Each structure stands twice: as structure tokens, then as C-alpha cells.
Amino acid sequence: MKFKGQTNYDHKGTKPKKGVLLINLGTPDEPTPKALRRYLKEFLSDHRVVEIPRLIWMAILHLFILPLRPKNSAKLYASVWTDEGSPLMAITQKQTHKLQKNLNEQYGEDQIPVVMGMRYGNPSIKKALAELADKNVRDITVLPLYPQYCAATTGSTFDAITKELTNYRWVPSLRFINGYHQSSAYIEAISQTIRDYIKESGMPERLIFSYHGTPKRYLEQGDPYFCFCMQTTRLVTESLQLDELSIITSFQSRFGKAEWLQPYTEEKLKSLPNEGVKHVAVICPGFSSDCLETIEEIEVENKEYFIEAGGEQYDYIPCLNDSDDHIKMMRELIVD
Image (cartoon, rainbow, N blue to C red; front, side):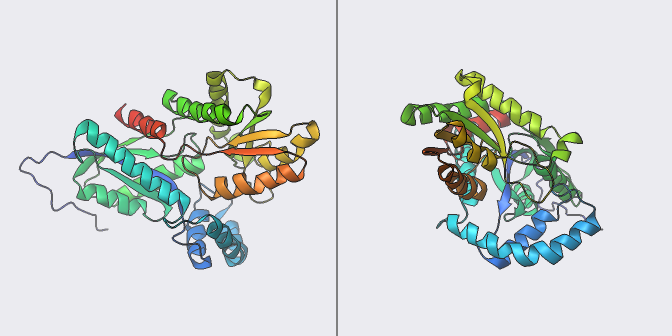
């Protein structure tokens, strides 16, 4: 095995730097079936994402999912694509630039380089780590942009980073932030977006906290994600001093026939009008950036379910994205 060595290191006294690696889930390079097939193959081949025996799952993936799903997924991505690319890519780039500017103001120009990488797709974690090495970064703080730890997201990110570093001759120091759902700055940032919404639109009859779902068996086997989502809802509810009866925690984006975490967001939205609830607002605190799952699924598709069932007002509260409060939270996590 040939290791990657840093041959341009200045041994005469140039001080190595600390740096930051922001990681998000990823996105296809373009909204085409070919690009989606490549992206989905990488994503769905991750053993952390799909915990089905490999031979069985690989047969399902290559015989049924990859030949059929990319075409439909490409259409959905095309519906949210922007001139800057996918929303997730554009927003993560803005977050990176704003965080870099923030750290520059505190520590000096490019003294703490900030680089972004994607767990799946481009820019890859491999490329991001190489970029930090080129900037003489020997101490890396990794911030996966998933507030609530989950093996399929945060755990998978750790796998990918450490796997790549096994190829390095000189392994850098590594500080890995494996979640921040109880961070006071995060809770305050989520709370403030809700305050701003209520000030403008009034308090809805139900405020729905919708998180990305996982198979229920992951919880039963010890994944803390469900508990962390429930804690997030509770902490924000307490921060805002809201009536617990007006709050719902639900889970979206289920896939396949297995039972996932419940209640399901879409089913809850379909049932609420029959219970006399006509005005709801939905927020997705598990997403650091608006993306296909929030824009197309929550803002568009789930709104249709609610209105068709007899609802009258449906509002989506955007993610923290590149808001000042969100960047402040990232800086506090990193500095701490």
C-alpha cells in the first residue's frame, strides 16, 4: 500500500494550522437520470444507510432500484434546481463562506481555513481533506451538519473520514462533533425562526416538528436518533413556552415496506383536518439546509395532502440555512 505523504511540509518553523471541515449529506451533480444513478448508487451502497444483508440488498439495488428510481428522482430534483445548482449545495457553500468570514474576523485572514465536503457526491470528503492538507492544516475540527446524531448520517460521516485517513502517512489531529441538538445556540436559533414566523403569521393550531425518518428497528437496536429528535422538540417547546398540546413530532421520507419511526408526517397531515385542525405550520429541525426533502416533500407534496384533506392554511418554516444565528451557532461549536 502506498500512503499519501505531505512532501511540501516546511520544517523550518511554519506553524501548522487548525481548520474546519463542514460535512453535509450530498447531492447529485445535475438533475439527470445518469447523475442520479451515480449518486444513489453511492448513497444506497452505504451499509450504515441500509442495514440489509449485503448480497440481498445489492441484488435489490442493482436489479430494481437503480434501473428505475433515477428517472423519477431526476424529475423531482429538476423541480427544485436553481441557477446555483441544488439548494443543498448552494446553501452549504454559503454557510462555508459565511463561517470563514466570521472566523477570519475573529482570528485573522484564513488562519482557520473552512472547507466543505459531501458524504456522497461532490465535493467529496477525500477532496476536502486533501484541500485542508494543502493549506497546512494539521488539526481538523469536523462538523457534520446533522443536529441529531444518527448512525446513518453522523456515524457514516465518521466512517468515511477515518477510512480516507487510513491512506495518509501523516494523520492529522481530529476533533469530531457528533451532534449538537442540545446546544443552547442551536435551540435558540430554531426557537427564533419560530418566533419570527408566529409574529408574522400567528400561532398555528398545530406546530409540527418533522424529522427525517429511519427504520424503527434502528431504534430498537440502540440508535439514539429518535430520542434526540424528541429532546429537540421538548427543548424548543420549553424555550418558547408553548402549550405541549399544540406540538406534534413526526417523521418523514420513509422508504420501503418496513415499519419506520412514527407518526408519519404525511399521515398525520391527512388526519388533522378530520380532527378540526385547519391551520398548521411545519418545521424540519433535523435539516441544516433546505433540500429536496424539505422543499419538494414538505413544502409542496405534504401541503397538498393537508389541503386535500380539508385543511385551510399550511405554512412551511424554512431551515436555518445561512442565517446569522446558524453561523453563530457553528462558530460557537467550533470555538468550544
